[in-house]
Length: 91
Image 1 (cartoon, rainbow, N blue to C red):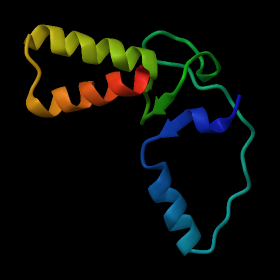
Image 2 (cartoon, helix red, strand yellow):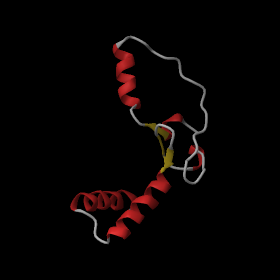
Image 3 (cartoon, rainbow, N blue to C red):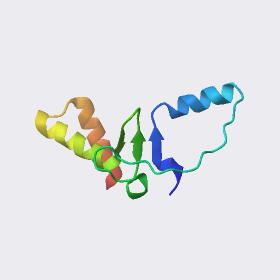
Image 4 (cartoon, helix red, strand yellow):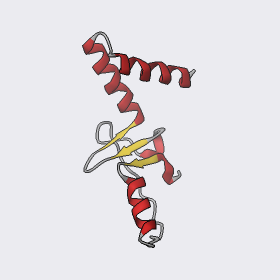
């Protein structure tokens, strides 16, 4: 699986800073990243967000969003826009 399935928080900022300083790091060996919630590796999910000490896969993210919306009963206007965009993409 490709490394682009793992999204690290702040990764792009670090790349920009490294390129500004003229430092080009060698690519590191690929290691699987596991979801902190369901335990699946990034090789078995669509995307993985890697944070400081915690990771979450796209499937667990969707479950969390659905749970929060169900508990609030009515999403905010901003949340509804995001949901509408997600449903358009998934069709």
